[in-house]
Image 1: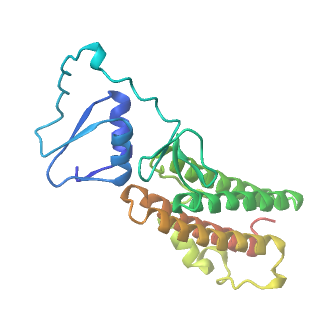
Image 2: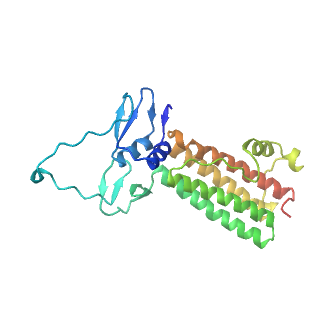
Image 3: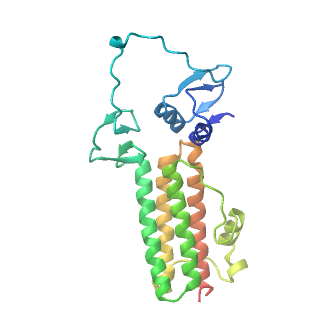
Length: 251
């Protein structure tokens, strides 16, 4: 395995905790994986033959043993600094690990949170208009956005899933060829299209902003590229919903 990711280490650590980890020649440890090893006090052995058992400590007279330092309540996810109270300009990235509030990961989460709020407002509108199909599709969209947020916070890979019952190639096919599937051409939004379609268009624009934030947060993190891809697909999903609304599928 060329890339050692945090998710891989977490899976191994859950099965059996370890004190050392061997990195073979040519293997790459991602930044989040290295941070995980640091948090668990795991020693990294490079170019070894395998994981090694830690050496037994040499006995020291009790009067010479320094008192253990109290564990910090919070630590910096950037430089490992410790805090007893959370500074006002910082927030939790995960667990007790802190970053400043304008960290790219926090900016990404903030935009994703705002998007979920906007989806809920559109879902309320669809319920008031008695568009059950639109409400159901919005609920699926909301669940997907929440799954992305959860996987980012929990440092888990994003599971592959169908959205609107469609695979990635099927989403691309329908969004690129609307006449073939919806009997209408591509949509150029105008003010007379109605509140539902314009609301969906606003959601689509918001996803583009979230996608840019995701690129800033995850571009150099190979184990998070699935987030960027998912958001690209989400934009296509909302455009398909716009096509369905324009074609009268939701009536």
